[in-house]
Image 1 (cartoon, rainbow, N blue to C red):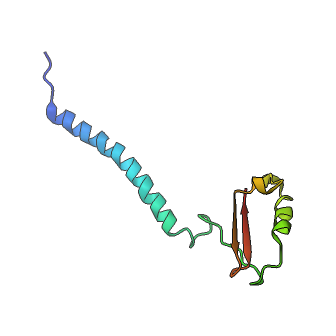
Image 2 (image 1 turned 90 degrees about the vertical axis):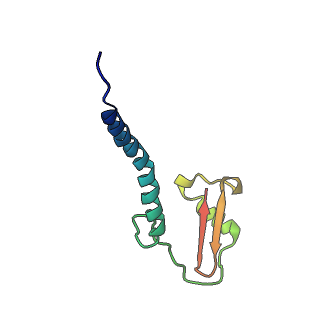
Image 3 (image 1 turned 90 degrees about the horizontal axis):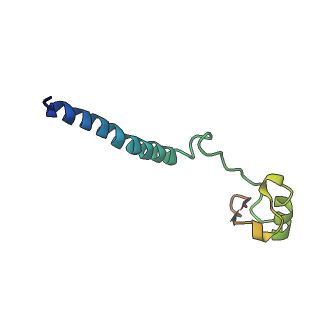
Length: 97
């Protein structure tokens, strides 16, 4: 009959348990750091464009017409637009399909 070395089993259990627990903690830590510095590095989040004016010169219909010319967006009508971010102070409009 072979005797079980409980110290060795305990060490192996804690070794692998620590590795399994460390992986999700590292994912949360790294993603949190990236979210903190996303505005500083363009490879995390591209820089926002800036418009030229502060007063909107396009109507919403013109914005829809321009957005529908982008084939990747697959926009045919307002039903295909899920969100529109209008920032007159920066002179930009973002359309999300």
